[in-house]
Length: 263
Image (cartoon, rainbow, N blue to C red; front, side):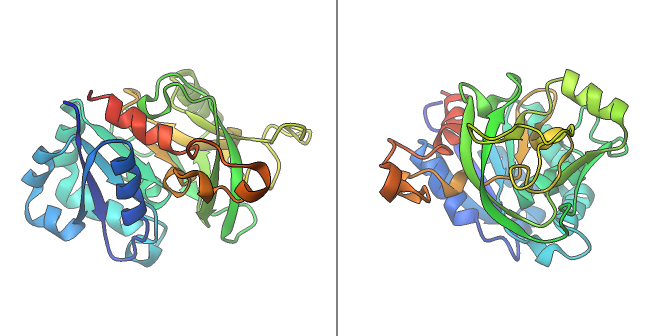
C-alpha cells in the first residue's frame, strides 16, 4: 500500500486535527478528519483506514480530567472496534490530549481490559506549560520512532506527568521497551540535578524517568505529550531566523515512519 488512509479523530475542544492531518499528508498519506460522533454512529468507518490519530487539544473541555470524557466514550462504545483495528496490524497515534485518551482507555497496555497501571496527571508545578523541549528516542520497539535519535518539539499541556502504580511497574514497562521517548537536557546542560529525573524546565511536567512518550508492547500504538505536528516545516522552529533553516522539521519523520510502515 503506497498511501495509507489516516483517520484523524476530533471531538468538541480538539484543536490540532488540521495540523495533524497536514503532517500526515506531508508524509504521503491520505487523511480524513472525522468527528467522534460519526464513529459512534458507524464504527465500521474504521475499516477504511490503516492509521488512527487522536490529536491534541482539549477534548470535551478536559472536564473531569484531561482526555477522560473521550476515553470513556471510547471505552463504552468503541472499545472492541479499536481493539480489532489494532489487532489487524494497523497503527494508533495519540498526541498530547490524544495520548491522555489512549492511555486512559487502556489501549497502550498489553491487556487493555486490566486495571490501568500508569496515568498522566498534573504537572509538578500545577500549571499549564508551553515550551520547546529536547527529546531522545529510548526504545527500538516503537514503529513511529524508527531511525529517530533525538527531536526538538513543543509541549503545551497541564496534565502531562507520566506516573506508574509503583516502581516495579515502571521497571517492567522499561524492560519491555514501552518507555519509548524521554525528555533530555540540551547539549551542554546537566542531565540531572542529583535526582533520578531530569529537572525542570527540561522535564516540563516531572514525569517519572522523564518519560515523554509511551508505546504498547507491539510498538504499533504510541502516545506522546510533545507535538510533532507543530514542527514539520523548517520555519516552525523558534530560532530559524538565527540558526538557519534545516531541511524539514524534526516532527515530520515520525509521520513518515507511520506511512512507510505500510509501503
